Image (cartoon, rainbow, N blue to C red; front, side, top):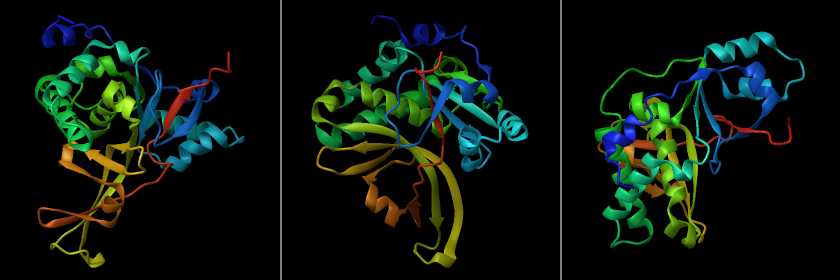
Length: 260
């Protein structure tokens, strides 16, 4: 792959978002929810609606037209390209990550690849800020490579795909799933429930090792830690952060191959 990064990014300049239409989506997609190994053509929905409302759209026989329209107006989607494993930018970022971690194995290698991908994304890919994505549209990843801004869901989705593409991790039996819900933050350097300061919506990557260990891979916040520890709370500077999980949060949908 001899193209420079600028040439690779320019190659996505003609990609366009398409209108998000839940009336069409419920006929052609199935709801996968969250913590899923991403596949070609998957769409990750990011909505201001409660995730239960979106679930109702797929499973409620009442055909709530008003709710569907509300979802169209308050949701945007991130679409994984078909044949993403052949994508030029993803392979470029993977190669850079592998170069930075070639003398390491296991978790240390994972940390170094993840940091490399993240640093390249925020310094070389998303460096020209052009505004956040608008609700009501589905954005192909290629569009975001060329015009996208920094945002945790995009970065985590890209990182999840790249880590899945790494052949050494595949041989080791490490699996990666897109994760996300929210982080509770507590101030004053204590876990006192009364000192809760914020509830931050966030996305990251979950890494599943063959020995049963699960790690939070969150280079955005420089956190690479066992899932159980993250759930109990970790100290970040002078605060405690608690990662929360809910399979109904941050909905992923997949084209239903059984439908025509």
